Each structure stands twice: as structure tokens, then as C-alpha cells.
Length: 466
Ligand code: FAD
Image (cartoon, rainbow, N blue to C red; front, side, top):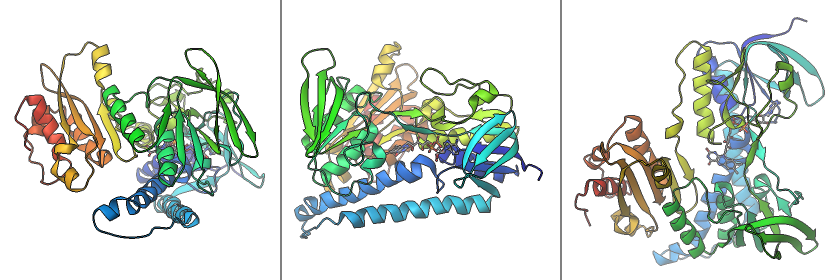
């Protein structure tokens, strides 16, 4: 039988892969997407962004039912039904992954179910779960194989006891004591879910600060807020071993700067020290490609080799679903002879805790290191009327603008719905706008977004409204 032949074969059906496939279909290219999971959507839809946000939302409501409700005159006696919470999450995830299948059909994308391996230039072998193999021809191959959790040396994963982020999305019971190793975004989001549901949460971090990459002033406030909520931090601490027994897991922890080791105990340990690119069994050697030291595939404007392209978590840039999605559209547009471009400087970051943290552009630390002269405006949510009325006054907005031109260089928000508010900053910055542009734009009252305007007004030195 003749091999099926495609304009584009994409390996991986996550936000990078599925968006690339749909874009290719929309541009009239003959396209197939190889995905070995039972469902489409990759890490993000199956075991990442979406299930974590379902648990974050549910646990926030649980928290409100246990505190805020009574404060505003709603009296209830909440009872936790964890199996139902998981079911609601799984049902939503199921609907989302089916939605991608529907979009594939609508845009004439073929889903080749199985593990994809590049066997030579323009040829991909697909091995299905039942062991059957087919080889397809591809004028272009797009690698979108994503990433996997990074293991911690000396700490082996063990079902239900020493878990990764996927394990933390499916815990059958609330642990009494949860130790999170790694104070990055994923660890803090999932840690805050289980803390709200009743776990005592200790976060152990190698560095002497949380959330590297986040503006230091914001990270300091963030840590203070999480501590106030009941999370405990052990910074500058290195986990070197784990021993699990019947009554939990014992971690050996040393000061990162050297010194005597101590042990700490938890029922469950969540290892969330980062993610690493996934290229297992991909056949890169068949096309003469070697990933870099950290496992990422290098590229020149998405191109890895003749007719081979790469996008998403498996290559450089922030390991975020929306970055993978931007890559996806840009790579297909490039393949189709159009102009494909991503502005990596304007990829927003969001931490979906309560309060949320969001930022776009440069931090103060980066501006200082680069010797850029900048102006800074700040506005606290304690002075924002909507935040006050909703009892969500933790946090602030910070706008950083070029001292000479007033061009916005970075916006940082810690506060309610920061992840929604950050986009007015991203749009302003994508147009090369100034903080005065934000300051002179009428914002509806009463909204949390008024705090963004007030912070921009503070850059201008204008009087703040009460
Ligand atoms: P992936 O989503 O990892 O998809 C790659 C796919 O390729 C997988 O389905 C895999 O099965 C498949 N694959 C790999 N190799 C092969 C092969 N050889 N053959 C066939 N198939 C193969 N990002 C955000 O932007 N916002 C968030 O809120 C957010 N929350 C997260 C929460 C958690 C707990 C985690 C773990 C991640 C989160 N992320 C979030 C990160 C986000 O999930 C990733 O950045 C995103 O999924 C990357 O997309 P991708 O397409 O590059 O790779």
C-alpha cells in the first residue's frame, strides 16, 4: 500500500501541536497530527493548565464557603466531597479534549494515534498502542513533543507518596502534611489547592527566594501573602534524599550554602522543580539533530533541519501553553510562505493562586541589570474601591516606564484577577504605548483595572484618586 503523504505532519497534540494542526488545516494544507495519548490537548488540557485551574477554582470556593461567606452574611456548613471535585474537573477536561477532536474534524486534520518517530528526512513512523506500525511521508515535520516533570536526584517517584504535578491533580484524599519541593509556579499553585482543602503545606526551595523570574518586590509580597494564608517556606534548602515508610516520607534537607542536614516529614511529597523537554524515541539522530545540554532542540526561526521544525516546550522560551500556541501559528505561517512572528518579550506570565500574580515585559531587576533608566508607578489594591468592597485588597500594580520616552517596559500585578488585567498592559506594550496612554484612557468604575490606570498615573506623578 502506498504511504500516505502530507504537507505537514506534526508530532505531539498539545497546545503547540494542535494549534499548528488546526492552523495548517485552515490554510488548506494537508495535515496530520501524531499523538500517543488517548486524548488530544497534551499536558495543558490533560494534566496541566486545565485540571489545575479546575482544582484552584473549586478550592477557592471551598475556602470562601469556610470564611468569606459568613463574613458577608451567607451562612452554610460546607462538606468536602473530593471525589465529586475530581469528577467535575475530569468532566471539564473531557469536554475540552473532545473539543479539540471536533476542531480537528472541522479543519480536516487527521489524528494519527500512536507514537511518532522520525525515521529519515520526510518520513515519520507511527506505532499504535496495539503495536501496528505505519509510515507516512511529510513535506514538513513539526516537532511539538512538549515536556515532562524533571525528577529530583535521590528522590524517586512513588505512587501516592512522592508525586509529580500529575499525581497532585489526582490525590484521592487530602494529605495531613504536604511537602512541596520547588517554589515555582506549579508547586505554589498545587500547594495552595491542597492547603485550602486542609493540608499543612511546607515548601522547600533551593534558592533564597520564591518564583525565580518574578519581579523581586512582587515575589516578596507574594511570599508574605502565602505565608499569611498558612503556607510555610523553607528557603535556601536542598533536598538530597527521601525515605518512605508506612507513615509517610522523610526528606533529608541540607542548607544550600552547606551545613548540617536535617529531616522533615510529610504524608505526601510533591516534586515540582521544573519541567524538561521530551524527545524520547523521537528519532532525532536519523536527521542529524542533537538537543542541547538541557535537552532543548535549537532552531533558527523554528527551523531545525531541512523540512523539520520545532515549537512549544521542547524548544527554548517560556514553557507556557500560550507561548506554544504563538509558536504554532508562526511556524505554520512560515511553512505556508507567510510572515510568522512571535514577540517573546511580550509573553505574559500568570500565577493562578489567590491573589493571582501576573506580569508582562521586564522586571525592575532586569532593568537595573541592563542599566536602563526607568520611572516607576505603584498603586495598592487597598485603595481600589472594587477590591475593597470584595475584601480582596492584598497586592498592588506596578508600572515601569522608560525615564526618557515614557514607553511602558514592564507591568507587574499581584492582586485579584491579575491574570485578566495584565492584557491591557500587553496590548499597550505591543503598540509601543506609553504609561501616559494608560493613564489617559478612561477605565470603568468600579473595576480592579482602575488600579492599573492609577499605577500609570503614579508614573506620571499625577494625583491619585481615593
Ligand atoms: P505538551 O502540552 O506537553 O504536548 C506534547 C504532546 O506530545 C503530549 O500530549 C505528548 O503525549 C505528545 N508526544 C510526545 N512525544 C510524542 C511522540 N513521539 N509521538 C506522539 N506523541 C508524542 N501553561 C500555561 O500557559 N498556563 C498554565 O496555567 C499552565 N499550568 C500548568 C499546570 C501544570 C500542572 C503543568 C504541568 C503545566 C502547566 N502549564 C501551563 C504548562 C503547559 O502545560 C505547557 O507549556 C504546554 O502544555 C506546552 O505545550 P506543548 O504543545 O509544547 O507540549
